[in-house]
Length: 119
Image (cartoon, rainbow, N blue to C red; front, side, top):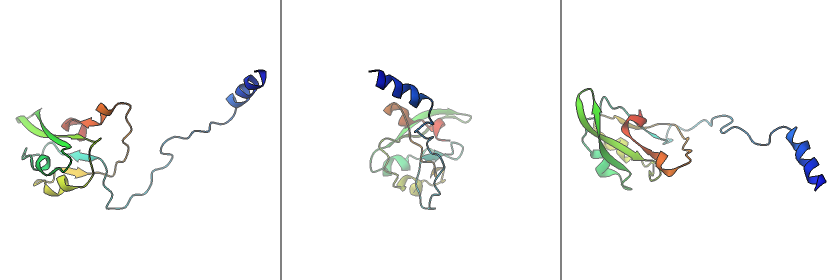
């Protein structure tokens, strides 16, 4: 028992064994597909991204903008395949795949991103 206590006290003064994530960002290839980004100003509410999504990850939701109420894509990152079909089919090219690869969340509901959170 005393031996365990002494080990604990000794290890408290040592250097940490965990590291920050990520310690340094990886260089990614040009073809990398990360989190989706949405330019709300150019979105025309066509719903093409919702219709083509093979995993039904995208749903159109009402958003109040300067021009009034519009339907814009809401993304469920927990189901996204990052296939890029939504980006290809988007007429004004307002939906794009970024190079951001940080998807940490404590709750699955945090991965459901409203249009305002995709900018």
